[in-house]
Length: 254
Image (tube, rainbow, N blue to C red; front, side, top):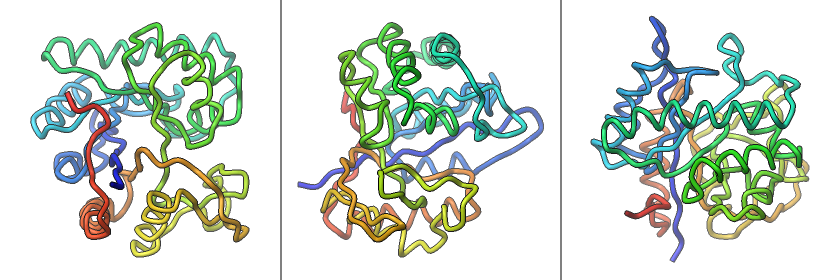
């Protein structure tokens, strides 16, 4: 049986700024990555988003990012492994406090944006993040780009890992995501995005921009909650995956 977790980055509003349609999108995903205040989110948003996710039976993960509100955490910042470790612990701890107060469990940790992409190719950085997650709670699942250094680091330290694929992003021949600064980094056509996900789940491959079939593991697929048509796409991808005989469920079942 083919199976996939559908995750979405949520809780990205902060202060007077409202981003995304979190409550609506939570109807169609199985895991939620909640921003922890560095790249987006604030204490009130974290608490409310976690409560909404728990109410709808959606598993919750911490989504630590770089300290860059203006750049939404998508601009690389030169940080040391020690800084990556500290930032990860700090942000997991922030979300964990709200979850503990409400009696909600945490399923996973998924780095955000530039931190995620940096860890995908930087062995030392990925080791630091994996160590932070393991020391905080070795039962947490570490989400990372399929085939990346982060997945390797998580496995080496003893964490359960989830290889993540992207519905709305194009890939390079080495398995990395096409940088957002380059043309055609984003897939705007819903039908193409769905077709790509089905190929990744059923065939274990993705067709790169160079036309090559790149092998990858697909445990969880990300849809972005801040996109222009995020809600429509969330509905579409869930419907189409189920129609293709792919079972949708969270990784942690308890």
